[in-house]
Length: 359
Image (cartoon, rainbow, N blue to C red; front, side, top):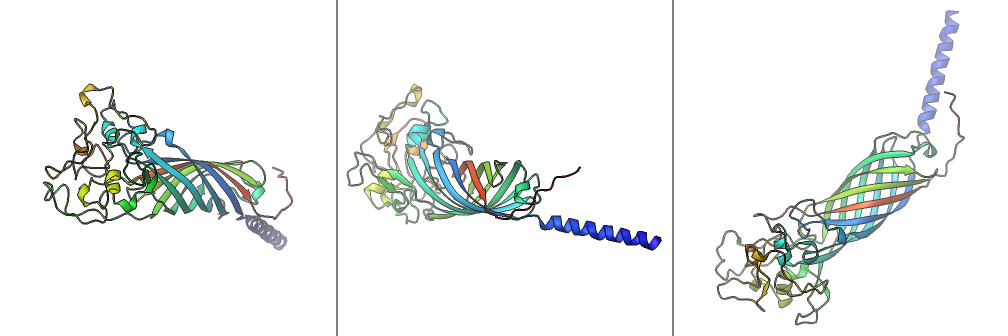
């Protein structure tokens, strides 16, 4: 009797083990493909306020992408994606000349656009596990993600209509102009030749191919057996500060190689906002005076003064900060944010009978 009971226990153990193993083997690590449609936003030196998290919603642009992902168990998935979007910023549109905290940015009068082509690989972690076949996954699944990405970019600026050259009114690449003297040799001319704040050489030129760290969170909704819709926000942490071609110090304009480079480096004296065509003026605070267009560059004392705005010292000569208007050191690195929807289709063709649970 004891032997028969032991035999029955062993059979039950083996049966339960095979059942668990069979259930485990039904954990399907399926592939899926999808598309994304997102809002694209920029955080950087041309943002409305001198804060890390400040963006002008008027410049929200679409971002589109294609992606493929693979489930790696109950909680983890990997996803590879390629996406495209355009970032944009404009001091004239974003900064309020009536506010002290943004008057410097208004006076600086820089603007840019930048097309971003990004290739990314991320790991996703779902808080609620989904086990078994693809049609047994959860209907709602919140998740977080992190990964690595590389992107190609090429910031451009629009040349003023009254510029004396064939580039007038055109969008041109800013990096070749060395707008902050990047990669150039200082001549040492002028009264700031030995100024330690200006430095002894210009910064290294930035690359058009950059790395970034995507991090974020989302919620995935199952809308059919094979379709998932995700709502997601992702931050791209950058390792450089020139996605807008702005972030360092004003160069000595005499070190730049052309009139076009000088015109695009310091635009504070332009009487017309190049994008909107509006006349520039400072209003709402009489103590700030008004923009004075001197009509040229005064090299009388080795410095230059294209535009004079009382109280905004850093616009009046080389060595002043071109990036972070308010601070005494260069601004923090730029960042961009991707917020939107991901629609994914599960590729697996396997199908197994549905078993109803009895408990």
